[in-house]
Image 1: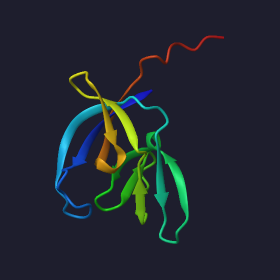
Image 2: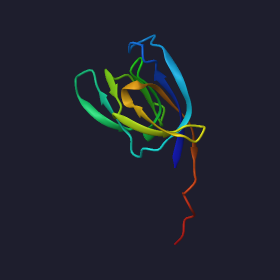
Image 3: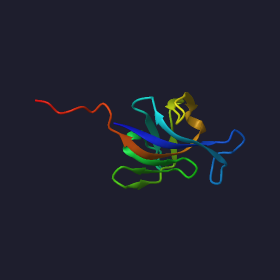
Image 4: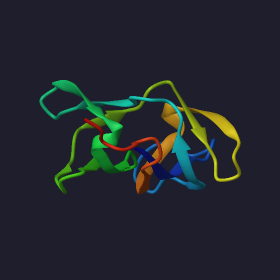
Length: 118
């Protein structure tokens, strides 16, 4: 199942942090498969979280919400260096992970799931 995400990007002149200026890229489908987010906890431990397990990711005030509704406030959230997306206009685009401010899941697409057969 592929999901659509509303993606907001930092403006090139914006400083990262609360109140940063962002612009919406709009609703996109992420083409890159298995996008893992590096989450650094307050005690310094880091681990990976699959983007498909999140419904919302906000890097302006480090926080993410899981598919089961748990909200987590880590010290830092890092995305891969490049993520490829398909915009609503059908164009493919590469996005620098540091440029992404927010990602919010919009819905799913069940194409390709097929039927169960025995």
